[in-house]
Length: 180
Image (cartoon, rainbow, N blue to C red; front, top):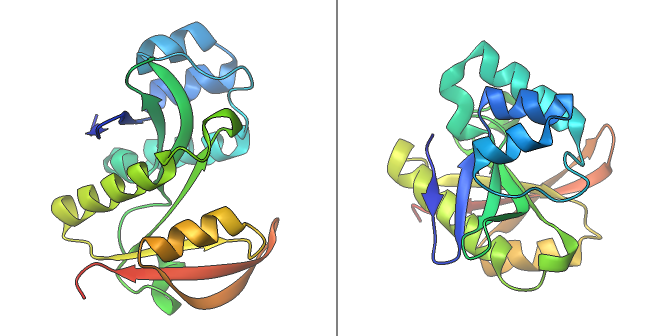
């Protein structure tokens, strides 16, 4: 497991065993594997976990490049998720961030507005830069998500395009080049 630690958080990968336990409803096993308690509605996006399980089973080296949970160290509690959509150089990124990586995040409502998304995003980008010398990052979000747009801009991301997500509709794409 390629865990990333920050001052307040541990970003833990979701192993195939943890993904399977989560999808089958074996919450105690999933919590044991994570070493942290899960929110009541876990998994809130089972389809995403199914996709991630397929990806990591097809290529185990992808595990650190997929979804991670944000564990609040002081409480051993999962407070959100963050992760890449795959390793550097994803095909769809060729138009927006060639050779880069896209990531996304979600902090659960009771933990928002406390800087956790910023802390986790900075740590994830630093890890990717050190691990794979990846310096180009992309975020895709609804233009109505003012909090995420504000966070992206404050982290140095700039809008580079727009695309239509099949389920979520119009999304703006932001890019940050750490090497600049």
